[in-house]
Image (cartoon, rainbow, N blue to C red; front, side, top):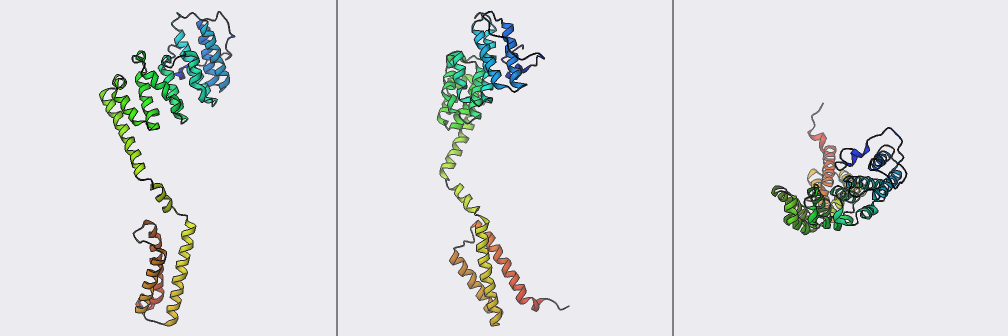
Length: 307
């Protein structure tokens, strides 16, 4: 447990002992609180008991309030309990109350540690509700005391990519990158990359607004095969009828060609089938196959060699 601020996964060290936290006590020491933190991590990550892990975090935070405030490990323990509590609430599907629970222990949005702010942004982005954390992240980034925080750049990047861009607040995203916050958080190359991402999102939105019928065209192109099949059957029946009529009349090849040409033109006029339209390729291909079959059946004896 050398550094709780590096990653919440490091809280999950197995103790090989009982997971139950020590009872609340007014004389609880920092070592006992570290043991409670390890117990909460083991309950959540090893045993999957998220409610018990959250209750342990609450108990640890209550005991932490009784600890001497000048102890330099208080902030480390508080951040550890809150990060585990956020993850436990997310597993319990109580993500809507996550940030309000964090504010119960930090009171002001700008006082929340950067690691917890990053975790909250990722959580609300994951559940598809980035607007829930938008105002809190904006206040945190514009607080002068947070500019020198170790995770300031990460919070700014997550706020830009997981909150502003998905919500379509592109003008605010540009202002963030070009403002003092952006200059403090990003290098010149990173700022240019961020602006390129914002502009690409703007072009995508503009393309969707210009071509609203793309989805409609795709639905038309993906027309059910049953309807197309029934119309093809009608076409086949009509061509077979004409074929039988031509055989009965005993007419030559020249009138037969005229009849077929007239029937094809009549069909295309009646059904308004455009040969240049992509959905007509299947119809024309099927018609060509039928004509080839009829040609072979009618005139094969004249050009096939005798055996």
